[in-house]
Image 1 (cartoon, rainbow over the protein chains, first blue to last red):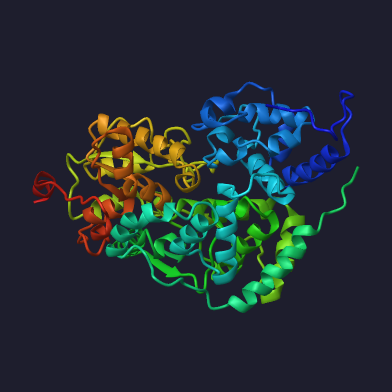
Image 2: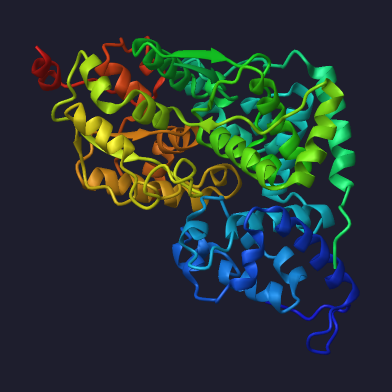
Length: 208
Length: 291
């Protein structure tokens, strides 16, 4: 499952160029999490994996994710399906005896994978996030029918047919809006977003 | 007391019954909810998975808008509650991130100065108003109604020190005081899968099947929830779960405010109960106990 990548150094403990880059951006994000530095204290006990309700569906478990990170194999983590199966229920985080912020570290890994575009085409979680983000940016609000529509158009449009009965049931209960709700301050909202995008790229200088 | 109310996108659509019943309950108890003007989407888990700073900025726009009123902000949706709480927590602990976020908010002459408390209505009702006072205001007892109190993930986790994170008690104590019978329900904080119902349905269907099975097996008449996503997954997908696992579940899923609203004398329409796909009615015995 874990293949040796070309740019990974074969000398133990020596990081390849790409791995070093990934490691730096990941560490930067982990340090932004309150309590993020406790990742250093992981004792590989496996409480996270044992507490996770979906670890049985993962190709690598939460405990292995931290082990791989330490071993300089971030690229293997990013190309796993495990990080995307996490539904962010925080069961691992509250049970970790060392206070490792596992769920928030998985969020950081998801963002890194998206940033590096390391995932298959028509990848479900990315398609959903992308649809969600585009609707929120546009209207300032999320819009459920639009989200489902965009998502299935990006992944598997045929499945939309199967959703029609549920859509109708919810519609007749008044639980589906035909038009998206929008915020009033859309113009200033997009100005905020543009500035936020610039801020996203600002990385503070690290003390060494 | 007065609170700033942040309904969130779900409460305007698939979970309108939650919005209606939250407003009803607060009103019946004489607490004022004032909706935040021009609030935007909190970003939910999806935005948080793509961009760190931007997701914090859009969530912090709400905090900045709410801050000038000085009231605590109340968010019923578990995802909104978690995201707003988390944003507040990160900004309080990370001055650099706070500066970056405020730099973006400045484009709309907004600034967030970390003075808000982000709260969930369940905790507000139990801690600020108090169970005893709620019981004294109740018009109808819930005697003998067998409930599974389902908290889901994000209201108790990550740890905010409000309740036991493995075996929370807030809803249990509240409804027990109103006469309900809380069934043994070890799945009370188990994850429903959230958005996995869309992205990896097989995983989510199994998670929800296990929750329904546990509630049903222990004799629950209804499952009480605090989260729009848990509600949709457990309710709207019950047919699909029945089909896939050859089961015959038909369990009403109610928001905790819908059940509380019934005890406070609300009509099904006022509480949005007519919007639920699986109908629930109080048994005669519960109503008679009141007289």
